[in-house]
Length: 379
Image (cartoon, rainbow, N blue to C red; front, side):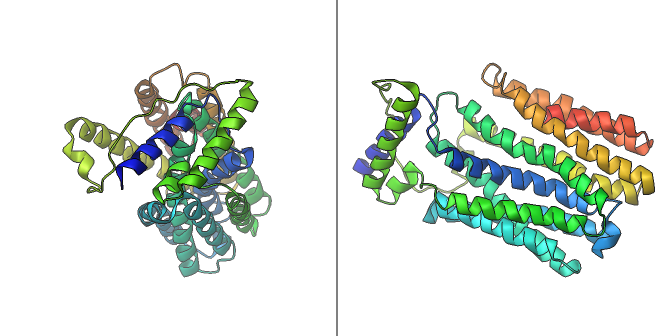
Protein backbone atom coordinates (compact mmCIF):
# COMPACT_ATOMS: atom_id res chain seq x y z
CA UNK A 1 0.00 0.00 0.00
CA UNK A 2 1.51 3.34 -1.07
CA UNK A 3 2.42 6.08 1.38
CA UNK A 4 -0.02 8.50 -0.23
CA UNK A 5 -2.89 6.04 0.11
CA UNK A 6 -1.98 5.46 3.76
CA UNK A 7 -2.11 9.20 4.37
CA UNK A 8 -5.50 9.46 2.69
CA UNK A 9 -6.92 6.58 4.75
CA UNK A 10 -5.58 8.20 7.93
CA UNK A 11 -7.17 11.52 6.97
CA UNK A 12 -10.58 10.00 6.15
CA UNK A 13 -10.53 7.92 9.34
CA UNK A 14 -9.70 10.98 11.44
CA UNK A 15 -12.51 12.94 9.83
CA UNK A 16 -14.99 10.23 10.80
CA UNK A 17 -13.56 9.89 14.32
CA UNK A 18 -13.90 13.60 15.08
CA UNK A 19 -17.59 13.82 14.22
CA UNK A 20 -19.60 15.02 17.26
CA UNK A 21 -22.51 12.63 16.70
CA UNK A 22 -23.41 9.41 14.96
CA UNK A 23 -24.74 9.89 11.44
CA UNK A 24 -25.39 6.36 10.24
CA UNK A 25 -28.99 5.88 8.99
CA UNK A 26 -31.21 4.41 11.69
CA UNK A 27 -32.06 1.53 9.35
CA UNK A 28 -28.38 0.53 9.19
CA UNK A 29 -28.01 0.75 12.97
CA UNK A 30 -31.08 -1.44 13.41
CA UNK A 31 -29.82 -3.97 10.85
CA UNK A 32 -26.59 -4.28 12.82
CA UNK A 33 -28.50 -4.46 16.09
CA UNK A 34 -30.86 -7.09 14.74
CA UNK A 35 -27.81 -9.11 13.79
CA UNK A 36 -27.05 -9.36 17.50
CA UNK A 37 -30.74 -9.80 18.28
CA UNK A 38 -30.85 -12.85 15.99
CA UNK A 39 -27.56 -14.20 17.31
CA UNK A 40 -28.69 -14.03 20.91
CA UNK A 41 -32.25 -15.02 20.12
CA UNK A 42 -30.82 -18.14 18.46
CA UNK A 43 -28.86 -18.99 21.60
CA UNK A 44 -32.15 -19.14 23.46
CA UNK A 45 -34.46 -20.65 20.85
CA UNK A 46 -32.43 -23.85 20.62
CA UNK A 47 -32.63 -24.21 24.39
CA UNK A 48 -36.37 -23.63 24.51
CA UNK A 49 -37.12 -25.64 21.36
CA UNK A 50 -35.60 -28.64 23.14
CA UNK A 51 -37.23 -27.84 26.48
CA UNK A 52 -39.16 -30.44 28.52
CA UNK A 53 -42.39 -29.20 26.95
CA UNK A 54 -41.45 -29.78 23.31
CA UNK A 55 -38.42 -32.01 22.81
CA UNK A 56 -40.58 -35.09 22.29
CA UNK A 57 -42.17 -33.44 19.23
CA UNK A 58 -38.84 -32.66 17.54
CA UNK A 59 -38.06 -36.32 16.97
CA UNK A 60 -34.74 -36.00 18.80
CA UNK A 61 -33.46 -37.71 21.91
CA UNK A 62 -31.89 -35.64 24.68
CA UNK A 63 -28.43 -36.76 23.57
CA UNK A 64 -29.12 -35.78 19.95
CA UNK A 65 -30.51 -32.41 21.03
CA UNK A 66 -27.30 -31.72 22.96
CA UNK A 67 -25.26 -32.53 19.86
CA UNK A 68 -27.38 -30.19 17.72
CA UNK A 69 -26.85 -27.37 20.23
CA UNK A 70 -23.10 -28.02 20.26
CA UNK A 71 -22.87 -28.08 16.46
CA UNK A 72 -24.52 -24.67 16.31
CA UNK A 73 -21.87 -23.28 18.64
CA UNK A 74 -19.06 -25.09 16.79
CA UNK A 75 -20.26 -23.29 13.66
CA UNK A 76 -19.15 -20.02 15.24
CA UNK A 77 -15.49 -20.99 14.78
CA UNK A 78 -15.31 -21.47 10.98
CA UNK A 79 -17.87 -18.70 10.57
CA UNK A 80 -15.74 -16.18 12.45
CA UNK A 81 -12.49 -17.26 10.76
CA UNK A 82 -13.69 -17.66 7.18
CA UNK A 83 -16.12 -14.75 7.07
CA UNK A 84 -13.65 -12.50 8.90
CA UNK A 85 -11.05 -13.31 6.24
CA UNK A 86 -13.63 -12.78 3.50
CA UNK A 87 -14.56 -9.38 4.91
CA UNK A 88 -10.95 -8.26 4.53
CA UNK A 89 -10.92 -9.51 0.94
CA UNK A 90 -14.25 -8.37 -0.51
CA UNK A 91 -15.49 -5.84 2.05
CA UNK A 92 -17.64 -5.51 5.16
CA UNK A 93 -20.98 -4.91 3.46
CA UNK A 94 -21.14 -8.01 1.19
CA UNK A 95 -19.90 -10.22 4.01
CA UNK A 96 -22.50 -8.84 6.44
CA UNK A 97 -25.13 -9.66 3.81
CA UNK A 98 -23.72 -13.18 3.60
CA UNK A 99 -23.85 -13.67 7.37
CA UNK A 100 -27.53 -12.70 7.38
CA UNK A 101 -28.17 -15.12 4.50
CA UNK A 102 -26.48 -18.01 6.30
CA UNK A 103 -28.39 -17.27 9.50
CA UNK A 104 -31.70 -17.07 7.63
CA UNK A 105 -31.16 -20.27 5.63
CA UNK A 106 -30.00 -22.15 8.73
CA UNK A 107 -32.93 -21.01 10.88
CA UNK A 108 -35.47 -21.77 8.15
CA UNK A 109 -33.90 -25.20 7.68
CA UNK A 110 -34.24 -25.91 11.40
CA UNK A 111 -37.87 -24.82 11.33
CA UNK A 112 -38.46 -27.46 8.64
CA UNK A 113 -36.12 -30.14 10.04
CA UNK A 114 -37.43 -33.68 10.29
CA UNK A 115 -34.47 -35.66 11.66
CA UNK A 116 -31.16 -35.47 13.47
CA UNK A 117 -29.08 -34.94 10.32
CA UNK A 118 -31.06 -31.97 9.01
CA UNK A 119 -31.14 -30.42 12.48
CA UNK A 120 -27.36 -30.74 12.77
CA UNK A 121 -26.53 -29.42 9.29
CA UNK A 122 -28.78 -26.39 9.43
CA UNK A 123 -27.79 -25.53 13.00
CA UNK A 124 -24.13 -25.57 11.92
CA UNK A 125 -24.98 -23.22 9.02
CA UNK A 126 -26.80 -20.90 11.43
CA UNK A 127 -23.79 -20.96 13.73
CA UNK A 128 -21.48 -19.96 10.88
CA UNK A 129 -23.65 -16.96 10.06
CA UNK A 130 -23.84 -15.90 13.70
CA UNK A 131 -20.09 -16.39 14.23
CA UNK A 132 -19.38 -14.10 11.29
CA UNK A 133 -21.90 -11.53 12.49
CA UNK A 134 -20.47 -11.37 16.00
CA UNK A 135 -17.09 -10.50 14.47
CA UNK A 136 -18.16 -8.13 11.71
CA UNK A 137 -20.75 -5.95 13.44
CA UNK A 138 -18.14 -4.46 15.85
CA UNK A 139 -15.70 -4.03 12.95
CA UNK A 140 -18.29 -2.11 10.92
CA UNK A 141 -19.12 0.10 13.90
CA UNK A 142 -15.46 0.87 14.67
CA UNK A 143 -14.88 1.95 11.08
CA UNK A 144 -18.06 4.05 10.75
CA UNK A 145 -18.81 5.43 14.24
CA UNK A 146 -17.08 8.57 15.61
CA UNK A 147 -14.72 8.10 18.54
CA UNK A 148 -16.62 10.46 20.86
CA UNK A 149 -18.63 8.32 23.26
CA UNK A 150 -18.09 5.26 21.10
CA UNK A 151 -19.09 3.01 23.97
CA UNK A 152 -22.46 4.79 24.12
CA UNK A 153 -23.06 4.11 20.43
CA UNK A 154 -22.06 0.48 20.84
CA UNK A 155 -24.46 0.24 23.76
CA UNK A 156 -27.36 1.32 21.52
CA UNK A 157 -26.70 -1.64 19.26
CA UNK A 158 -26.25 -4.00 22.18
CA UNK A 159 -29.48 -2.88 23.85
CA UNK A 160 -31.37 -3.97 20.74
CA UNK A 161 -29.19 -7.05 20.45
CA UNK A 162 -29.66 -8.09 24.07
CA UNK A 163 -33.39 -7.75 23.52
CA UNK A 164 -32.93 -11.00 21.62
CA UNK A 165 -31.59 -12.54 24.80
CA UNK A 166 -34.04 -10.64 26.97
CA UNK A 167 -37.38 -10.51 25.19
CA UNK A 168 -36.59 -13.49 22.96
CA UNK A 169 -36.71 -16.13 25.71
CA UNK A 170 -40.00 -14.80 27.08
CA UNK A 171 -41.56 -14.78 23.60
CA UNK A 172 -40.16 -18.21 22.75
CA UNK A 173 -41.24 -19.75 26.03
CA UNK A 174 -44.81 -18.51 25.52
CA UNK A 175 -44.90 -19.89 21.97
CA UNK A 176 -43.46 -23.25 22.97
CA UNK A 177 -45.74 -23.67 25.99
CA UNK A 178 -48.88 -22.59 24.11
CA UNK A 179 -48.37 -25.22 21.41
CA UNK A 180 -45.49 -27.65 22.13
CA UNK A 181 -46.23 -29.66 18.96
CA UNK A 182 -45.31 -26.94 16.45
CA UNK A 183 -44.26 -24.08 18.72
CA UNK A 184 -40.56 -24.97 18.38
CA UNK A 185 -40.88 -24.67 14.57
CA UNK A 186 -42.42 -21.21 14.94
CA UNK A 187 -39.55 -20.14 17.20
CA UNK A 188 -37.01 -21.08 14.52
CA UNK A 189 -39.13 -19.52 11.76
CA UNK A 190 -39.18 -16.17 13.59
CA UNK A 191 -35.38 -16.16 13.63
CA UNK A 192 -35.30 -16.89 9.89
CA UNK A 193 -37.77 -14.10 9.14
CA UNK A 194 -35.73 -11.55 11.08
CA UNK A 195 -32.53 -12.64 9.34
CA UNK A 196 -34.02 -12.16 5.87
CA UNK A 197 -35.34 -8.71 6.85
CA UNK A 198 -31.83 -7.78 8.03
CA UNK A 199 -30.39 -9.05 4.75
CA UNK A 200 -32.58 -6.66 2.76
CA UNK A 201 -31.73 -3.66 4.96
CA UNK A 202 -28.00 -4.35 4.86
CA UNK A 203 -28.07 -4.46 1.06
CA UNK A 204 -28.86 -0.72 1.17
CA UNK A 205 -26.02 0.15 3.59
CA UNK A 206 -22.77 1.72 2.45
CA UNK A 207 -19.37 0.07 2.58
CA UNK A 208 -17.11 1.38 5.34
CA UNK A 209 -14.88 4.35 4.54
CA UNK A 210 -11.75 2.40 5.38
CA UNK A 211 -12.59 -0.54 3.09
CA UNK A 212 -13.54 1.76 0.21
CA UNK A 213 -10.17 3.46 0.52
CA UNK A 214 -8.18 0.24 0.79
CA UNK A 215 -9.89 -1.09 -2.33
CA UNK A 216 -8.88 2.06 -4.20
CA UNK A 217 -12.31 3.73 -4.24
CA UNK A 218 -10.96 6.89 -2.62
CA UNK A 219 -13.37 9.23 -4.40
CA UNK A 220 -16.36 7.19 -3.21
CA UNK A 221 -14.94 7.13 0.33
CA UNK A 222 -14.48 10.92 0.18
CA UNK A 223 -18.10 11.30 -0.91
CA UNK A 224 -19.31 9.16 2.01
CA UNK A 225 -17.28 11.18 4.53
CA UNK A 226 -18.50 14.51 3.14
CA UNK A 227 -22.09 13.28 3.46
CA UNK A 228 -21.41 12.21 7.07
CA UNK A 229 -19.94 15.63 7.85
CA UNK A 230 -22.94 17.46 6.41
CA UNK A 231 -25.30 15.22 8.38
CA UNK A 232 -23.34 15.88 11.57
CA UNK A 233 -23.62 19.65 11.01
CA UNK A 234 -27.33 19.37 10.35
CA UNK A 235 -27.99 17.27 13.45
CA UNK A 236 -25.88 19.38 15.81
CA UNK A 237 -26.39 22.83 14.29
CA UNK A 238 -22.60 23.34 14.20
CA UNK A 239 -21.13 25.56 11.48
CA UNK A 240 -17.60 24.16 11.76
CA UNK A 241 -16.67 20.66 12.90
CA UNK A 242 -13.69 19.91 15.18
CA UNK A 243 -10.30 19.72 13.49
CA UNK A 244 -9.45 16.07 12.72
CA UNK A 245 -6.42 14.69 14.53
CA UNK A 246 -4.67 12.72 11.79
CA UNK A 247 -2.35 9.96 12.98
CA UNK A 248 0.11 8.75 10.38
CA UNK A 249 0.66 5.02 10.15
CA UNK A 250 2.27 2.37 8.00
CA UNK A 251 0.13 -0.49 6.78
CA UNK A 252 1.95 -3.72 6.14
CA UNK A 253 1.07 -7.37 5.85
CA UNK A 254 2.08 -9.31 8.93
CA UNK A 255 1.48 -12.67 10.51
CA UNK A 256 -1.93 -12.59 12.29
CA UNK A 257 -0.10 -13.79 15.43
CA UNK A 258 2.31 -10.85 15.20
CA UNK A 259 0.56 -9.11 18.10
CA UNK A 260 1.86 -11.78 20.48
CA UNK A 261 5.42 -10.60 19.81
CA UNK A 262 4.61 -7.30 21.50
CA UNK A 263 4.91 -7.88 25.29
CA UNK A 264 2.33 -5.19 26.15
CA UNK A 265 -0.36 -6.24 23.71
CA UNK A 266 0.40 -9.93 24.24
CA UNK A 267 -0.77 -9.70 27.85
CA UNK A 268 -3.86 -7.67 26.91
CA UNK A 269 -4.90 -9.94 24.05
CA UNK A 270 -4.44 -13.11 26.10
CA UNK A 271 -6.46 -11.57 28.95
CA UNK A 272 -9.31 -10.69 26.58
CA UNK A 273 -9.18 -14.13 24.92
CA UNK A 274 -9.44 -15.86 28.30
CA UNK A 275 -12.27 -13.54 29.34
CA UNK A 276 -14.27 -14.31 26.20
CA UNK A 277 -13.53 -18.04 26.49
CA UNK A 278 -14.78 -18.29 30.06
CA UNK A 279 -17.79 -16.10 29.29
CA UNK A 280 -18.94 -18.51 26.59
CA UNK A 281 -17.86 -21.52 28.64
CA UNK A 282 -20.06 -20.43 31.54
CA UNK A 283 -22.89 -18.64 29.79
CA UNK A 284 -23.76 -20.59 26.66
CA UNK A 285 -24.21 -24.03 28.26
CA UNK A 286 -26.31 -22.30 30.91
CA UNK A 287 -28.46 -20.53 28.30
CA UNK A 288 -28.78 -23.26 25.69
CA UNK A 289 -28.76 -26.40 27.79
CA UNK A 290 -30.52 -25.27 30.96
CA UNK A 291 -34.06 -26.44 30.10
CA UNK A 292 -32.63 -29.58 28.52
CA UNK A 293 -30.37 -30.80 31.30
CA UNK A 294 -32.83 -29.90 34.03
CA UNK A 295 -35.38 -32.20 32.39
CA UNK A 296 -32.88 -34.95 31.53
CA UNK A 297 -30.67 -35.08 34.61
CA UNK A 298 -32.75 -33.46 37.35
CA UNK A 299 -36.13 -34.89 36.50
CA UNK A 300 -38.02 -31.67 35.76
CA UNK A 301 -41.14 -32.63 33.84
CA UNK A 302 -44.82 -31.85 33.54
CA UNK A 303 -45.98 -28.74 35.36
CA UNK A 304 -42.59 -28.21 37.03
CA UNK A 305 -40.82 -28.37 33.68
CA UNK A 306 -43.23 -25.87 32.14
CA UNK A 307 -42.84 -23.57 35.13
CA UNK A 308 -39.06 -23.65 34.76
CA UNK A 309 -39.31 -22.92 31.03
CA UNK A 310 -41.51 -19.90 31.75
CA UNK A 311 -39.20 -18.53 34.46
CA UNK A 312 -36.18 -19.15 32.25
CA UNK A 313 -37.80 -16.98 29.58
CA UNK A 314 -38.91 -14.35 32.09
CA UNK A 315 -35.41 -14.07 33.55
CA UNK A 316 -34.09 -13.29 30.09
CA UNK A 317 -35.73 -9.85 30.23
CA UNK A 318 -33.15 -8.96 32.90
CA UNK A 319 -30.46 -9.06 30.21
CA UNK A 320 -32.28 -6.41 28.20
CA UNK A 321 -32.73 -4.25 31.32
CA UNK A 322 -29.10 -4.77 32.29
CA UNK A 323 -27.95 -3.43 28.92
CA UNK A 324 -30.12 -0.36 29.40
CA UNK A 325 -28.79 0.15 32.92
CA UNK A 326 -25.21 -0.08 31.66
CA UNK A 327 -25.84 2.96 29.46
CA UNK A 328 -25.76 5.23 32.51
CA UNK A 329 -22.33 4.09 33.71
CA UNK A 330 -20.48 2.87 30.61
CA UNK A 331 -18.73 6.23 30.05
CA UNK A 332 -18.14 6.88 33.77
CA UNK A 333 -16.45 3.67 34.95
CA UNK A 334 -13.33 2.05 33.55
CA UNK A 335 -14.07 -0.83 31.18
CA UNK A 336 -11.84 -3.21 33.13
CA UNK A 337 -13.74 -2.50 36.36
CA UNK A 338 -17.12 -3.05 34.71
CA UNK A 339 -15.96 -6.29 33.08
CA UNK A 340 -14.48 -7.64 36.32
CA UNK A 341 -17.59 -6.77 38.32
CA UNK A 342 -19.92 -8.39 35.78
CA UNK A 343 -17.85 -11.57 35.68
CA UNK A 344 -17.55 -12.21 39.38
CA UNK A 345 -20.87 -10.86 40.66
CA UNK A 346 -23.11 -11.68 37.72
CA UNK A 347 -21.63 -14.65 35.93
CA UNK A 348 -20.00 -16.61 38.74
CA UNK A 349 -22.40 -15.97 41.59
CA UNK A 350 -25.52 -15.99 39.38
CA UNK A 351 -24.74 -19.31 37.71
CA UNK A 352 -23.87 -20.93 41.05
CA UNK A 353 -27.18 -19.81 42.59
CA UNK A 354 -29.16 -20.94 39.53
CA UNK A 355 -27.53 -24.38 39.49
CA UNK A 356 -27.95 -24.88 43.25
CA UNK A 357 -31.60 -23.89 42.92
CA UNK A 358 -32.15 -26.36 40.10
CA UNK A 359 -30.43 -29.21 41.96
CA UNK A 360 -32.62 -28.57 45.00
CA UNK A 361 -35.71 -28.13 42.79
CA UNK A 362 -36.15 -24.66 44.25
CA UNK A 363 -37.54 -22.75 41.27
CA UNK A 364 -37.49 -19.42 43.11
CA UNK A 365 -33.78 -19.75 43.96
CA UNK A 366 -32.98 -20.80 40.40
CA UNK A 367 -34.94 -17.80 39.13
CA UNK A 368 -32.96 -15.40 41.34
CA UNK A 369 -29.71 -16.85 40.01
CA UNK A 370 -30.89 -16.47 36.41
CA UNK A 371 -31.92 -12.87 37.07
CA UNK A 372 -28.54 -12.03 38.58
CA UNK A 373 -26.64 -13.73 35.79
CA UNK A 374 -28.61 -12.01 33.07
CA UNK A 375 -28.87 -8.52 34.59
CA UNK A 376 -25.24 -8.09 35.67
CA UNK A 377 -23.26 -10.87 34.03
CA UNK A 378 -24.68 -10.63 30.53
CA UNK A 379 -26.54 -7.34 30.19
